[in-house]
Image (cartoon, rainbow, N blue to C red; front, side, top):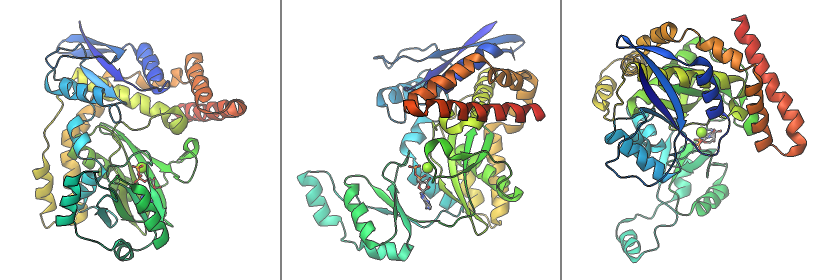
Length: 410
Ligand SMILES: Nc1ncnc2c1ncn2[C@@H]1O[C@H](COP(=O)(O)OP(=O)(O)O)[C@@H](O)[C@H]1O
Ligand SMILES: [Mg+2]
């Protein structure tokens, strides 16, 4: 019997890791492995000084921390380069190719990204060297003229965005200048605003498993994911799913969330670089069990099939398709074939059905258990003020019950 270890790299969350551990315990996976049996253990990763030459006991790491905590971020890179640990997101592309690069790549591949400009920071570094450089080489520019060219309303947001930090909707020149003044040393995009849209959709992707959600960004955090299926026309749902897989495969991201806006029949990607995405029970609620199951299935697949993490990219293969004279639909199908090859999509779904036949049932039973309910109650108490506890405990219990009933009906 072979045992492999899954490491969880965590911040202060008490929801998905608990549910993941509970599910793992119930499932106690025993997987076929080279004529032998593979079992797995799950452990939370501790943070401490490390030798760059150190070994590790982890075989795969699910990371929800390194997007803001830099010591574990560098530990991940060491784990990838020195130890060959499987990481769900490539930490190198994640750090260097954030939102701005995702826009550029998608534009290069022909996706309808809204018109987007990069503006130099309002305030540069406070050094003589910067002042001399700016005086010699920075062109003066007319920000209102750029905004007029893009057209109002527009969005000003950090080029490397995330978590709605520093995002503002700009309706006129006064708001433009105020937002630019407030941006300080943060480098900003100006992007054409897509309003009065038909559908805002957010996708959660875990390996080749993609779930599209009807998303309402105007709602408070706990109400943004709407419980709604079939909210996109079938061809647009297929396109959205393909787009998510393509961009993730392109950058080697396997745990990411992606946002698109459907307006006048065109699906515009707007935010595709959210590796290590939010999977809180408070935000995902009804869809939380889907995320936990999918993380489990993909992690176990990677371990049981000895899948190697790919640090290098095959950008040229995508660009060759982009440069061909095919229609966009044909290009999309060709990109998707590359993405499916990367994710081993067919093999994965076959493997999941064969090796994890009890996964759905285990999650379904877990969602009805007292231990899961304790986790839910604990998280509501952490996040909401005391006078809202009773209301929100029942609210989220109701959503989980609805999921349990819907699954039973399937
Ligand atoms: N071009 C746009 N058109 C319409 N709404 C936008 C646009 N860009 C951003 N927004 C709104 O602002 C929110 C945050 O912007 P986003 O690009 O997703 O940044 P972040 O990476 O911080 O999530 C989006 O969820 C959406 O509601
Ligand atoms: Mg976003």
